[in-house]
Image (cartoon, rainbow, N blue to C red):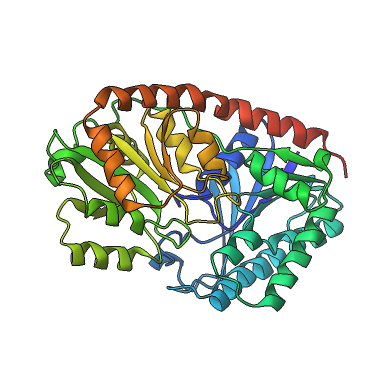
Length: 404
């Protein structure tokens, strides 16, 4: 098959949706398919293009057998609601024009967000006479409205109109969690059209980069719990809850590493300086070998979602954490997919959004290393259902059997 995958994020970005887009494309290539990835120049989560990409309108390159088509798009440094619309629209429009020149396509896979990619993808499917799958990583209209990123009622109605159009025209809709599937069903779309296509975990290589130690380089005592967050510092993460908890916990009991970038980073650093927290460290996103090393050294990994949004997306970072046998401390609503997962016993979830309770939990875990170990082992067991070969193999079979 000749497959077009269309999504705004791709390697060498190392966080968010990009690794899953890249993993999907490379797997499809390994199965003998010709794969074209229609994407942008790397910018996430820094919201800044590389110097080598500035001013470039279009570039085609090959990455591990995938034909990657990179299209110019507008990247605001601190995106407002209007700037984010312009950001997504610039990509969708330029990518659509480029897609018209890719000859004979058998299948189209659209990755959302951004939501408007579905409208353009539907039009493209008519031109190419190819069926399309609309794959949802975040339920963008719902999440954006709950986060206050889409204040205009007119824009809200327009986005929900686009959503209904896409869902009705897509040959299949795929989602990464059962909660997202139920939300779409409740909007009146048939269950048989909505398929579960969860994210997956990569096999873990133990002892990676073992000569380097984050603990030693940062001066973290062996007696203290090392807590790690890695990913985007955005509004929907609500990471300030952990900073507040750090201010209520003795430094000999816990040290905190935050790896990443994003719109909320400056405010987090300001708050850490205000509280004079010497046990909190900010690092850039780590390349894969060092990221794996970081997880090996971590005692507890952090995942958070701002209140009211947990039903609309599922944090993909959870799977890599559990595959390393690490327990998690999560902050999420009780009705979120994340909270439902943690019930399996591989971590502790706080739905109260209380920094006092988070600090108290860390003190309890500091005094009970056996419980940390047990939670880590349960995580390894839980994550096996998301084996990469199994998930992607089933998806490719569905792709082959799909009819226009």
